[in-house]
Image (cartoon, rainbow, N blue to C red):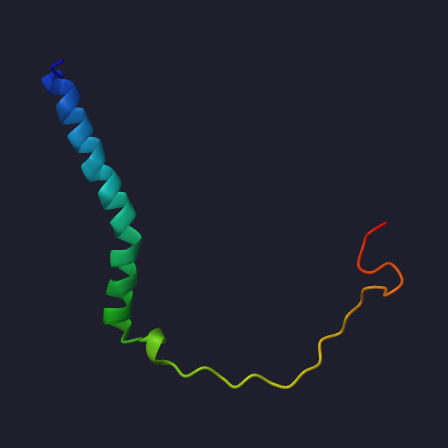
Length: 66
């Protein structure tokens, strides 16, 4: 079964457009990093503070909402 030339061209155009839309945000992100000089992957993470979390659940119902 042969495909019409118009249908084939439309499929190719839609694939190219979809790839462009998919890649555009990633390319803009790297362009922003290049222009601004930021490198978030090189930042050191802060040490976690020793903070006790509060458990506000009632222990009588073992966490159920009934």
